[in-house]
Image (cartoon, rainbow, N blue to C red; front, side, top):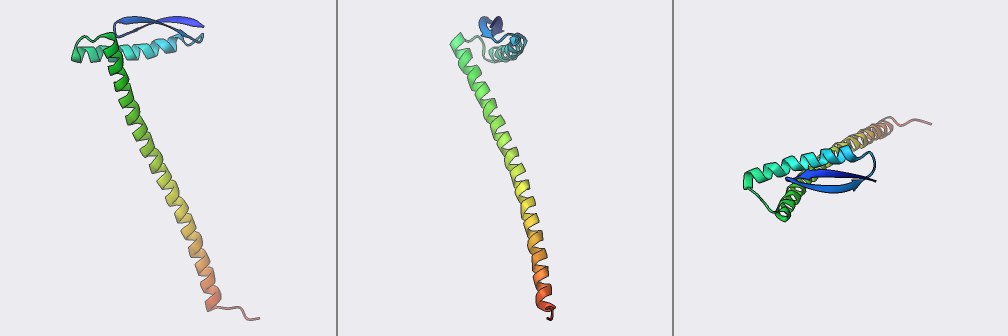
Length: 110
């Protein structure tokens, strides 16, 4: 396990992570640090607990928006798939109806 020191919201924290994940953790921390700096710039200094709570709320809101967007895309794709299936079934029904109509109007004589 590796130990990495990460700066988030003008504070440093030590975390353990799998070997080789240090740069990934730094990248995540840089993103959070930039967001924390933006937040503190707009509302002023916050205590560590308040900053943590606000960051959690902001990330939860983003997650919620992404889930809603993803669900909308999935529903749209499902609707398109369903429409294609209905069209295929309708084409088969139409072909069967034409075959039946041909049999009724032109019965084969034995």
